[in-house]
Image (cartoon, rainbow over all chains, first blue to last red):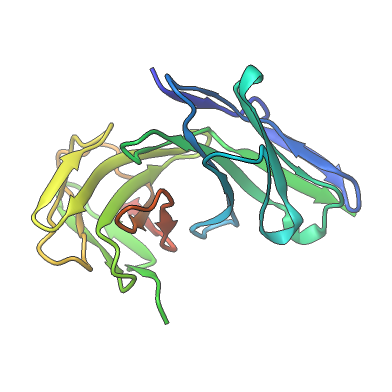
Length: 112
Length: 112
């Protein structure tokens, strides 16, 4: 069955420190991969996406993600977090049917 | 200003009542989706529509119904058969030939 796993439910990071959020997928073939961010009570905003090509993709708000086929992973990173990065982050994947499967999400808390 | 609108922002349902959540997009997207979000569970697909006058069940369609009479509109009805309707409902759309879904701001449904 197709699935997306985010192993970390909650991460706390200091402002200015680096952040890495993990995502693993289980699909028959390499899926389309996405990271979305959600502020409390809001919809989802697309941070970045990977379809093919360069395995390091750049997104908005200074985020990047690296696709590793051998590890079935698509981890999200940011070199220096800002207090405004506190939110919930979702990894998602889809096949050629474009139906998204979501991970359970990782909540990021930023401490001063 | 193009985008996806969902109304109302908050909706209250009495026991045994059907309620309808609105989703409208002016992006000229062909495909539209409804998701349910519960804490700690990510997003789960309720229904989706690839084209006007056609829609398919997602993973958790029981107790819900939809219609797609116009390209820009995809209303979701939560029926009395849905025994646990309290959740955050998100609508999304995707352009034809595109892989990315874009989300609306969501509707929170509460049971009185």
